[in-house]
Length: 165
Image (cartoon, rainbow, N blue to C red):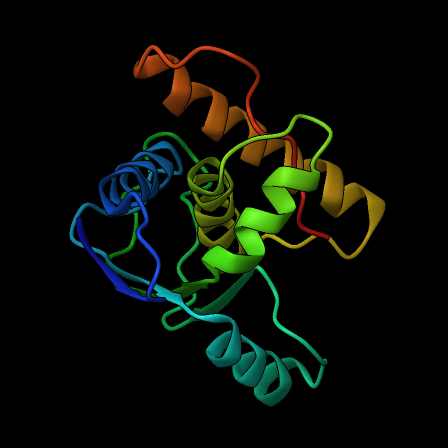
């Protein structure tokens, strides 16, 4: 799996954890091991510009996903996953820090960035949260992936609650 993590935010972030949780999420979703993903952390101004340009919404947001090859997880256990270019995930550490501090289960900026990375991966794979059923499916899967990743690393304490809307 080729995953590039680029930090253009001016903030110190745990790039290794972002890489690890992205790799874990893609493996868990059975995405082809030769697929490619890019994760970029940007500052508030850059995220606000992307948010306006692509979503026509004001202000910065926490995470945006830009799919390329529209890969989907295989539907059967014995199906061969397709190979391709997943796309880009853009994270905003400033927004992540604020959301983590305001979450019911207060957590660090890096924990929020890990959660947002999984959220971005799921969007790249076609998951969404527009309807209550979609939201339940996506956020349930997101929690299972984050909890599994944390358990494998022996991380204790509550997993971050979903903060993206």
